[in-house]
Length: 487
Picture 1 (cartoon, rainbow, N blue to C red):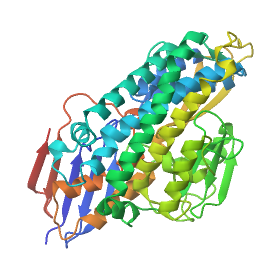
Picture 2: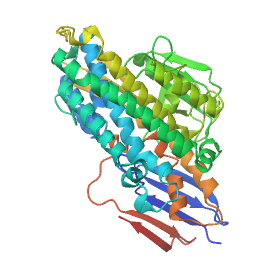
Picture 3: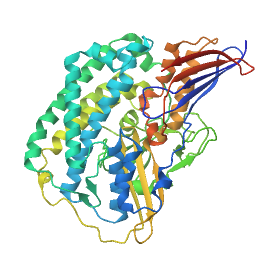
Picture 4: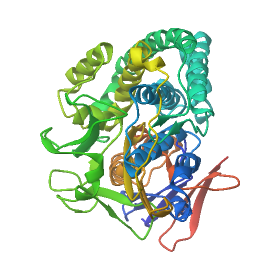
């Protein structure tokens, strides 16, 4: 039998663009596979020579889906650069906006990107494996509630940030304007509605996914599993926190491996360049790069929802904590290495975000008019860190004495998972493709290996024009023997 090469280009239901290369051996089994990002990222160079205060307005342009995350990491870097802490009200208003963003972004992923694989079935007809198919399953009323919640969350983000797509409301030392009492009253029902809606979505997940043996076997099975390190931000009690805290890393057995402040990230993380992709691979410096392998001796680690829950010791809100305990009881304890459980963890985090939104709307300091401390120090270097929906995000700026950027380093959330995503794709492909037999449904199941990570390639790639899906099967002479195209 001739050797073959299968290319899935572009991959679907993610942010940005990427392709999967699968190489088969002479028996038609998978020899190797990889996730490749073919476009160049250039925002770090764009930043050089610009005033630092422009960064919270420039970096949200990296992505139209998670601009709030880049805005927040950037302004926290400016806090450090100008050596000024936000006021209590400024911090509360920032976290309020960020909780609304995390809630609506996690639900966006579940309904539009990851959920269709489970709710419609991994090998269901592609024409129905999308948001419209999901609406058909969960009902128009639920779809209406989803739209209402997203609209209200985004209105809250727009009020604080000035704009919902590329917010500008956060400034070094705080925010640009107070949060009035009438806005507090306006959004309290939104928070209550958010809590109830996410509980409903969790019930849907329990009924349609966990209640289906086929899907449950996929979640618990070996095809979608890796034993890696895990990283996430935690508060003073080691509970998940999106906005502020220390970075905690646990090993594949769940034992604390490291715990550090964001400004010390260079002591713990390192970047690796591969010649076949424009995305850098992050790994744990003290373990070292050992290739695309898992286990305690490999520096590969994972971030984002399941990794955050693995790295933490619990959730800071009561309902999310209940769901956290249910999930680990079902998965057999911590840490859970089941990649598809990222979808489950994402919904638990959405519940935490809704509960945190409710808590902040009760906070007395929220409506205090003292929303900003004015910076006075001479800038030199600043690092800001937040937990993005897709993992830990670092912004690191160096400037001259006038505050002009001389160097910018952005460790984008998805980069943390790049090595793990390549490994997951290779393992899924090897487990699913045998004897050269390939179908659209099997290729979708290969893509299912990266969707739990909710990758945001838009942070690192930008492309123009049509993006048709083309799958080519080549013989040993690299001649195309079959081509499948999807627009």
